[in-house]
Length: 252
Ligand SMILES: Nc1ncnc2c1ncn2[C@@H]1O[C@H](COP(=O)(O)OP(=O)(O)OP(=O)(O)O)[C@@H](O)[C@H]1O
Ligand SMILES: [Mg+2]
Image (cartoon, rainbow, N blue to C red; front, side):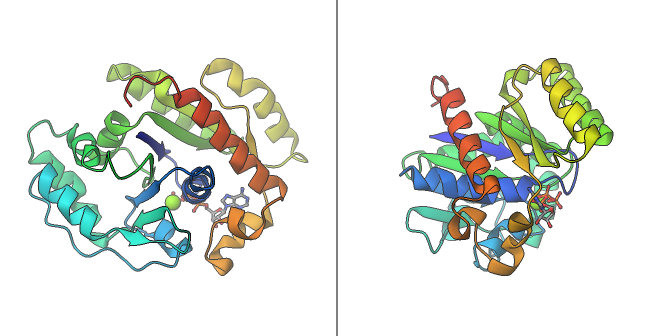
């Protein structure tokens, strides 16, 4: 089982769009796929037309896993399941904080799903908290959408610094460009230069596309309604990149 997260400290960069489309792309390859929405905003589940999760009993990793299991919803696409979010997830940090080994609990929780799924995708909220630290320690790969702007570049450097300070492996971090606009000169320059500073930078660039924004109206992944547009092909290409990167991963 591979655990892939969609994460950035920064908000509005395309994390949910990635998680939703990557979940669909993994499912298309025949992998049993679970999308876990960790963001109380609940947008990932909204795109799949599933309701909110029930409140969790968050006592220890076993009860969290059992409660998450009760909240698994089938999507319209057989083999692709969702665990929707709940506003109660805003307390995740406080609960994790009260547990021993508080940074490693999510990995233990997700291990309970090992025989049920080949891939778990996590859509994360935009911040850096104890829950984020759990995500870092649970993931086999962390995909980081970066809009080609100076501020996004700065946030990416903050994330790498955090990983170095906490002695986490930067090899897990896979930034990629999101919402890129070819007509924008600054975008073109940053796309050319920034990847040279980060070995794990993915090659695929997700273009800015109104087709992606239409997910809010269609309420399904882009790949389900616009199979061959440039953005859909880019999401599939990202999926292939991440499959080949995590293939020889010793965690699985
Ligand atoms: N490639 C794209 N082209 C055009 N619009 C996009 C693209 N990716 C995402 N969007 C739009 O940008 C907005 C933010 O995207 P999304 O919700 O995926 O970001 P996020 O990082 O998950 O945000 P948050 O931090 O609030 O969770 C949404 O309205 C979405 O439809
Ligand atoms: Mg989001």
